[in-house]
Length: 121
Image (cartoon, rainbow, N blue to C red; front, side, top):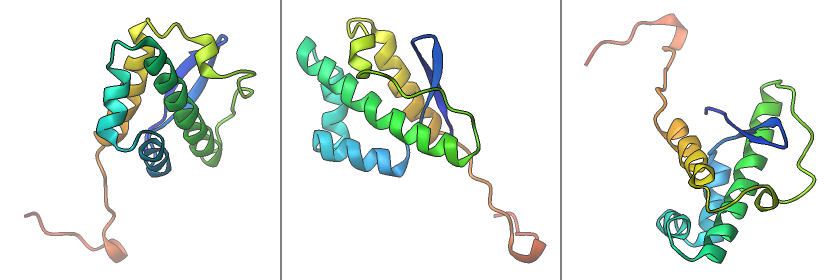
């Protein structure tokens, strides 16, 4: 899993798209397709709620993962992410999708058992 960072209040906060985050997004939106639709509508109130909910989920996942990896974490936000973001600024939505792409486009390396080489396909 890869950690991306988003800046709030002058500090970089880790976000990531973990399996638990995926589960929470599906629970909140009904499906990943409905999640993506909620971020891509012209309904400002719906977009604001979707951005806020998504950042809350990704920030929680990022804190858990970064903490498990021994990273030093900034203090938790004193408010909801939506209080700090102009949702008309598409860069917030771009940061969400960038974090998701980073986690889904990674290369997985597998170490062979007992140091044995695996044959090429």
